[in-house]
Length: 246
Image 1 (cartoon, rainbow, N blue to C red):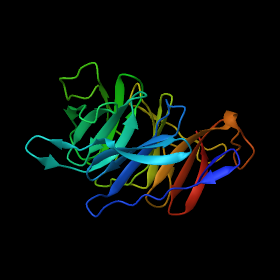
Image 2 (image 1 turned 90 degrees about the horizontal axis):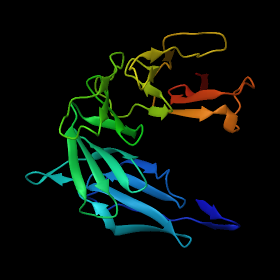
Image 3 (image 1 turned 90 degrees about the vertical axis):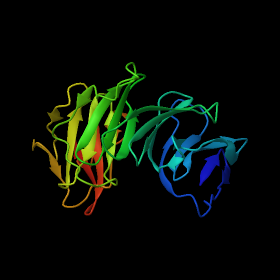
Image 4 (image 1 turned 60 degrees about the vertical axis):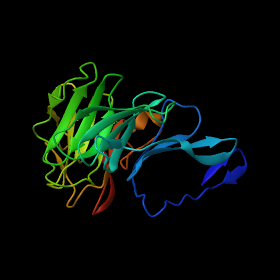
């Protein structure tokens, strides 16, 4: 449900039997509401225009690369106002210029199935996947699939459903040992996380798989359960939604 002034409107989208939805992200560079959605048949855009939501077939790319191979787009992120980064089940990282439905390029291959892609800035892309892979790639070296930075403490054996979020130079990642770890995106090193007031530990344990993590800046109005302001990490897992200090 969305609203504009006093008007409220909603739109229901149904996929055909060949399409499944895996990921979505809003365009942070756009003044209008626009979303990129990763599916089993490529990536689509859903955009708001004149108080209506439109799924435009002209702004859809099909992720067919090579000899007719097709793979699910499990992760999407906006590199700038027009370019979407796509991560696939079969390890492809593709860039799509949404102004041209055919303007999709395979940039490099990751070492494992991709569960998350995050544009850290105009040049660096964070790629998370199974087999304990969390890496940063520099797009200024387009012909190399070697990562610019790795995160040795990241643990994800086989899940594509663990939460991950970024804020400034911080990366928060759920792991298959039921922990959340916070890393520095410039060094790859783990940063201690304050799970409870006054406690500093290497990681936060959630007693179950971490489905979602999200950084929230207290200076923007979010107040923690103890009334403290500052950067917080909201964690959703088996024991509900929790508010952790960073």
